[in-house]
Length: 497
Image 1 (tube, rainbow, N blue to C red):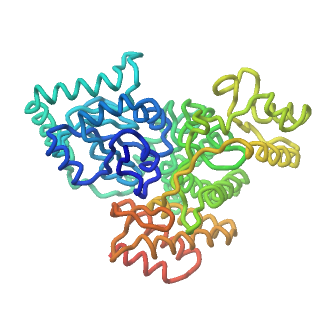
Image 2: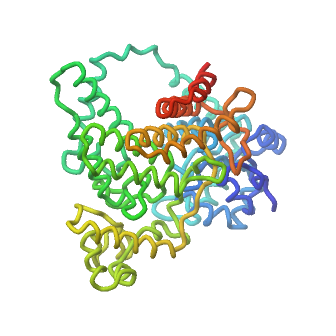
Image 3: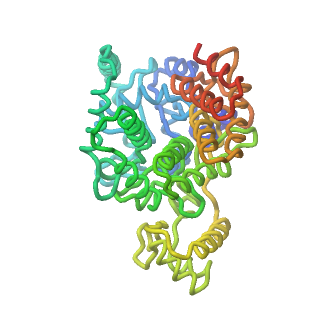
């Protein structure tokens, strides 16, 4: 069956174009089809670098028998959450309200009016671990719709009403020094004094919190205040992340998050927005301390963005997958035997010690994710070993890349590259930021309005949301500050006008 996803600008949707599922993109025509047929809608939301999205696709959406049930009983809509964060936000709130948790893939059953009445995330093809099979869920929902349609429609409408009421917010209070101090103190109370970061597993890189603490420290120093200096939290967290498995010790760049509290084993996808935000944090930490580690990491993160995420049209791709050859982390993990094969006995044993690789492994099947707990004395040997391991890894099947250009995330990358380039005297970073800015201004701005995504030089239909306008404007203003070209100041003003 030829579904309707083949000509979409989202690589994630295109991944599903050959499914036997009769997928629709998000559009009014899909809801009209559900009304005409008198069936509910199955909304599946994910993104291309999502490991469990791939798993559910392989297990269920590529299965002809399960697809036949989906096609018979539902109108099926597939959404890329990165392309349509507005849709994702609405139905994720419903999923969390109904189930107490959320995540991707997100699976929502809703009326033809778009009101959700049953939500979940990943469903397996067979029952197990207390979870029903996906086919059982499909048939159960369809049976309920057939026998209790009015009740389900009322449930959906009530959920929408409750979520709408929750969305009403007060005007809030002004952000003053007391509020800023309280924010820093709240971070201190949740800080992990042993491992860095905030809270327990899983641990996400707290880029915005670290940036806030650096700015809070600058404000305190400028005012002569004597409150406790928050720099220790930033320094320790940044060092633990940079030396852990969450950071790619060979090619640079941060993974999405760590599954443990010690930054050892990541969830391996690499996102543009994480690396853009973190590159800027490390550059600002270097500005505050002059230490060589944050300088190195800021440069390597920017080099990763330009080298591994740069697109032919001057922008930056969204992400690298967690999987290669259908296995999560296979591209990044090593065994002692693999180190020896790539380096020989002497350097292989040395690398195993330096990068904390042993027979027990820190990941799966006796493999380990490389860590660098401290810099070895022989820096030149480390550079040689790193280069040889990188060359050996290049022979592996690499993770897939989501090539779509997201306006907001490219705005973050422009800001990071321009800021880091100016601070660390890297004009090549400023040049890369300029190329991305040209793409956004000349391609993504259509009739005065910002579009969110493009792919291979073709702009998509989804309009920019608030984060797109804010992040792109900040990127353009940072680029103006770095180089003094007034066109970026004017372009930012037009976006915000």
